[in-house]
Image (cartoon, rainbow, N blue to C red; front, side, top):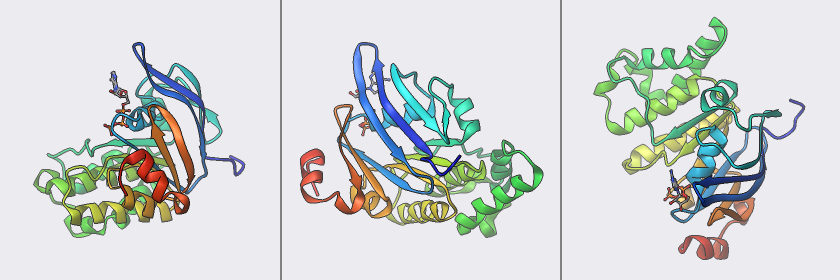
Length: 238
Ligand code: ATP
């Protein structure tokens, strides 16, 4: 790409049957930035994540990833191109060791050297696994498995990670570790879209925020400007 945005969403719409879940969504996200997608229950956050990931067919609009038009691509093809979507931390192989989980994830990365780098980066991002490479993933705690699923995602060397409610059900200490991991991933150049119940943490983490309301973008701007009235109005708190 030529320094353009990593992700461009243009006039995106999505229906479930007759119900309109996304309506005229447009935004851009620059490479290496983090975007927090906020909104009340049912506002359309997960639908947006699924649409960008190719997990649900859209009914209109365009999605450009790294300058490439991926609209209508199936999820596996979008994933190959640049993106991982992490819905609530699944996809850990409990019968395999930590390191084998990471190596298996990295199998999609072309080139032996790049594969090794991707695994090393995942381990760097989650130092908690450094001494536990040979441990069976099934023996990790729920929170650690969540972290391993994020580590696996990073081992695929994605350009964009969509973290959909990653902190759901995690103890506060684990939430800290997940946020730390995402922060290190961003420092390593990974672009992040975060859907998060902890609004203030998401705002502290992200560069940009997008507040959704009934399938539309109600507010968009830098996180530094997303406070007080914006949050009270659309999220009913803060
Ligand atoms: P939450 O925070 O509760 O997950 P959300 O902001 O992620 O909410 P979505 O899950 O995207 O919102 O839902 C947006 C709208 O689409 C809601 O009205 C929801 O009921 C509806 N919806 C979501 N998934 C489906 C589906 N598979 N079939 C039909 N309607 C759906």
